[in-house]
Image (cartoon, rainbow, N blue to C red; front, side, top):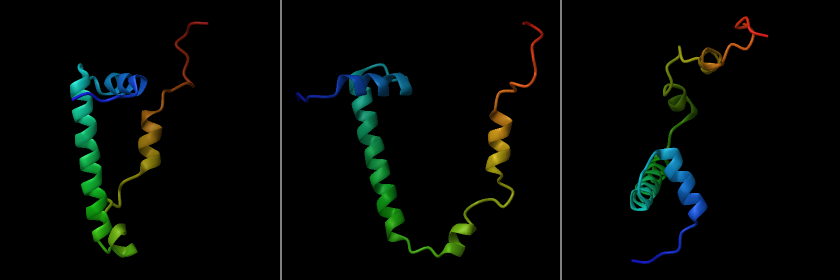
Length: 81
């Protein structure tokens, strides 16, 4: 099969994913598109109320605390200046 593919986009996907061949990257993209399509279809078929969504997250989940824990500590100097 011969197809025309945006080479720059393909190269970016390969770099981001660590895939080694163009075939692997194309198959990965197709599988990911299929997964997202199935997920979208499933979510569209669900009629969840706001209260149902509320119960989907752990009440102890703190996004801001996770972000702060991952931030580099720019306030501390390494002693070199």
